[in-house]
Image (cartoon, rainbow, N blue to C red; front, side, top):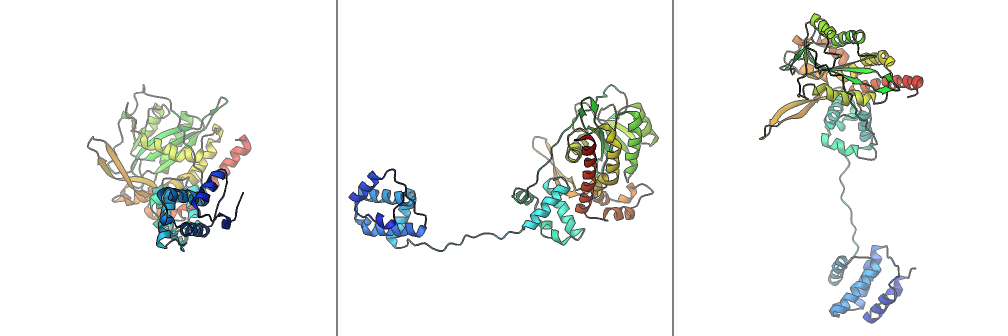
Length: 416
């Protein structure tokens, strides 16, 4: 039910009380602010509000609240303005800050996160900065200056629209009874060549074993080489480990594993001994001894390869993808975090602060007298050509295309 405002110009308190009493279920709404203000002013002057006693004033207030929908505190403020002659509708221009980052910038951020499987904000910040400064991409000019915290703000916008992957881990068979390898935590003292290694199993399905990913990471530079085998046995593991060691551009000094029997055995020890590489294994009750590579298992392998079952007979195909595309992307174009300082609390707890983000290749080049660590047949001139032949996003896109082709084969043949 609606009534014209002109029919509601009641100024006598007796009539107003009768109106309120007989229209308890009456629904009325004035939508325009100017109409509300005009009604308040007319009732104010028509009822001679300033001459009324307290009870009648309360009646007028209830009446105006009923018609306008204002709360009591709002109505008291408006009546005060009416008394002072200031009850007018002004022109209000809401102040708003100019958007620094456009929809195109947000789309570039989302594409970058999609290509790199959404790393943390500081790693993403490093990629965006390198796209503009290192590879001369003008479209990244604004994003090159973005703060790591504001990246999370843009990720919450409806334009961003990116979904994240999950993480999963599998355990390895314990080999604690083997008297092979030295129980020791790697201590590289700032030198590359101290490798940590671990296995990631792609799960079983109806009694069929999945592929095994072999993940290795350098302690200092975080140079990462990944391979894949069909089975954890000497026939598969020894050739792959030799191939992975050969892919490192620097000399491998130490090979550190947990107590999994695929590494702590006489065959691996014999192979490493021929290459003059020290074999160490994690100490009991020291869960952080191999934490670096275990973190990479989730942040890299599970993020890119997922958790669904992939039959072991695809190991050779996956290993080819790793060798030709993935390892190149990881080491030359994926930014990693490096601790810049260590804080020790009053309780003796150690906390590392990660403010430096760059690809492992840039970290390798930043080491003092870095040339001394390279293998004899490798030079930085040769590695630079490989590193800068494409930008980070271009390398990520090429890797993603190759990965999509790989998974299309899996789906076509296995219907997964």
